[in-house]
Length: 539
Image (cartoon, rainbow, N blue to C red; front, top):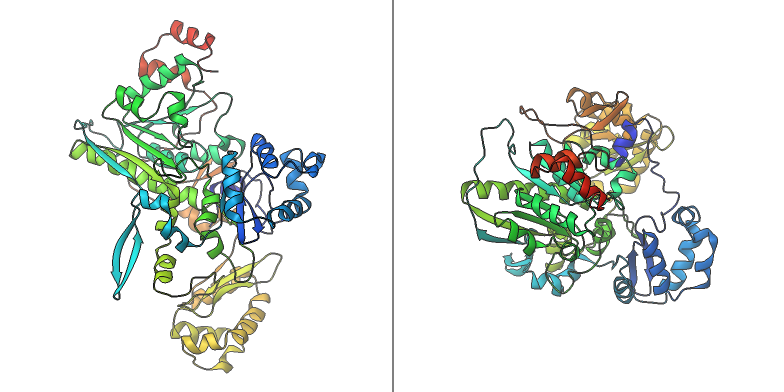
């Protein structure tokens, strides 16, 4: 699976992001460090967070090294820096490191197993786990991560429309990936999404191709919410909106003067969707988090790897997944208001969303079954893996589901026929031999030709391709997945098809629609807009 950033980068003609990891991106993304009892993940990606992290470590002398002064240098000299960080972290336990970092407002979490969360005070207070019985064993199962509260409101009435969310206005304070993914889907379905950004600190997605994808079909305004006039504008917009979506750290909206109570005061019928790392309630609600950090915290990163290798973060899976779930609950809340008049507040927890997808390891552990990283191996299929193919960084994935697949594979791959008609158990017993023969066969062929040969006989197989290959993929082209933008650029489209005329217009530049939105929604005239601008409301 490729991320939107990589797809948009390829569509812009900038090639593929290398699969071989040259540096770990110290200070830029998430870093996993060894401790005396496991591992801890840290993410001091912003300049002030790096300074605070050095203070957590007691301001070591190497912190003054000019190689590590800026983020670019920390990435370039990551091998040396990681060694210095690891020398310090190995003398401490993972929980104390994470606690010290969080106290300094540096995003950090210990790497835990999924079952350690069964005893979480945070999840207990939020009532996340539900009791059940499986095969006579009492277990706890994860529930949905939406944290819903409901109040009675007015029925919503929408005019006849061509798209499901025509007539719905969304005030979007979200940024980075999860929230903007949600509002991109809402905008495509017809909602008028007004994206609000701070003029001095816009959405970080603008630093890459993310905004060009996730900002589509939205109107963009800037408000300096440190200025009282700008706060009043935000409240006035909320009073004329149906949904407010935000994914700031807990407490930020309240400090800005646009928290839940203030918003409900100006608009009792407002659907408020808040997304945060651990939710807005509970003893750990104020922890600073990123999606990739929570992949480490929940145990996903450790399970999503190979046996006997250090845990790796992997791709940013949790953020886009949460975007999909947020879009689901937002549209469901609109439907509820349309049909019953009930008004929902959504207190979405990303860690709960991650654990909700990890029901199997949670249940297996409670039943006394092993929970461990399996790499590319499968408990159900054999052989099942990714094999080196002909060419540089060329790979082929193969999955043999049953005896019929195995019979077909034996006919195609010379040397496997000698092993006979093995069943799944027997194929696992002969894994070493099968891997040797199959690997020799794949290395002599291009991944595309090998995949075609196997697919022609009904054996699941696919070349492991880069994002650039997907730009030219005939199947995606036939489905109209790629959207033309600015002539030579292609942007990834929506993950579904429909007969409805879904909307897709270019992402706005920073603050491009401020005047027109405030005139359109609030009725402000040119003189008023000029006075607000002079007062610094727009930055």
